[in-house]
Amino acid sequence: CEPTRTRMSPEDFIVFAGAALTLVLGWITAAVVLVKSDAKELPRWAKPLKPLLSIFLGQVPRTPKVRCSSRHNEIRLDWTCGRSSVWNEDMYEVQTDTTDERVKQKLGRDFLRSFWGKDKTYTIGQLPANHRLKFRVRAMNQGGKSPWVEVDHRTTSIPEKSGGKETDYSWNQTNEYVEITVEVPKTTTSKTLEIEVKGGRLRAYCRKNGRELIEGKIYGPVRSSGLVDFVWELETVGGSKLLRVELEKTRPAERKTDLWPKALESGLDFDVHLMHWDRAWDNREEWQHVMRSEEGKFSVNNVSLDDYIAS
Image (cartoon, rainbow, N blue to C red; front, side):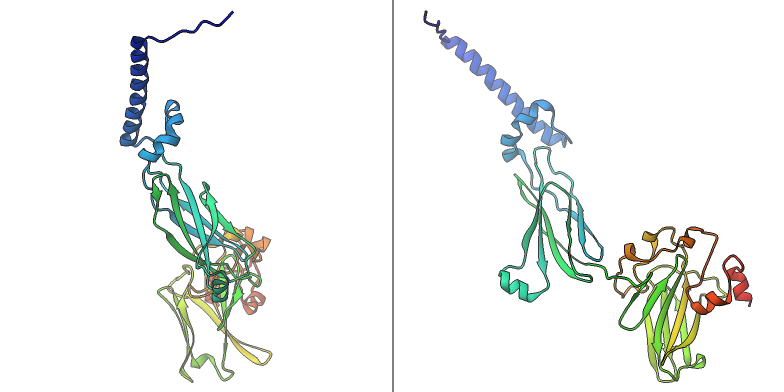
């Protein structure tokens, strides 16, 4: 037998079409209300409409706020970006530039896309130490594109022990002290030196030849008791004469990641994750000088800083 065909009467069709139109208009009206009310999430009934209505109701994304961090072989970008509309599906693009002009000429472009996706983090690895790169980040969605946010960052340098070597000086540290070493002329004596730690800055000047040995802002706060702000000494090593200045940190490091990445603000950043951390530093009651001469003169747990000053 043949199936029975049911034809919709004109009256039924009008009723059906009216109901469907009312439903669609209701969805659209509710969608507009959601946009106006700045809702954070779409209700379940509205999610099927997102691919279509996002074209009309989506808004241009906001500008990301980018933060950079690095190690000796990688640079990491993290960003935050508030959603401009519940109808948006925000995506993020990262492009990387290089300061090497040879690479630019070979590629023929200044920036190349290095990341595209929903994540708000990007890491580029296998980089050489102390290598600088430029990046730009933007958000994109159905409503448009945000402005580029350009940042540049450099990988950290590889440390030696718990410090590092700079062009004009070297430095080392414990959890409580920082020592800065500068090579000085062989004729330098304690009477020809002028050393000052003031306003968070270190300055060492040789009056005999009018030469400034070192000057710069100290990376972190150092203790100032009014009686002594620092300890210094002249030492002859091999054929060189060295000035060693020791500073006491205001806040001792409690873990390796609390160590200073540099001694002076103008210096290179060194990877604290590769620095030496002595297990003895875990005991906050102990304190040690960085200087070898002071280390040999006093023993741990046998003298306080006040005893040293009094001596």
